[in-house]
Length: 154
Image (cartoon, rainbow, N blue to C red; front, side, top):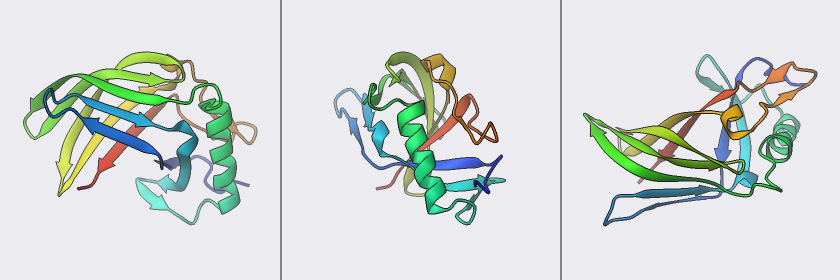
């Protein structure tokens, strides 16, 4: 059984591309929904590798890919920027997110952390026709709004 009930999950995407058009600065990112992998539970902002067994992770992966994202029907997740605005040390990207067969405008805020570039956004699953994941008779739930962080290392 899940020990991590009530905690956040850290999920890694293992197959993706991010292209930047040198001429226009436009960013096009593609993510394979079948490549999402539960990495660990997060408690109070701290990664907790001890809270999920390998079996738990496999079950979470299966449900997210099959039941939540329906990757057999919707095999692309993509983001295409339409505008980029510098705001002090940050960059605001506005663009179109294709998720679960629907395209919606989102805003991504990007900033530097050391040598890395970190991009963050919040996505409402119901806006894309996704019913938030629930398992174990409702004991494990994913919130309707999901915080997404993409870390790009040099």
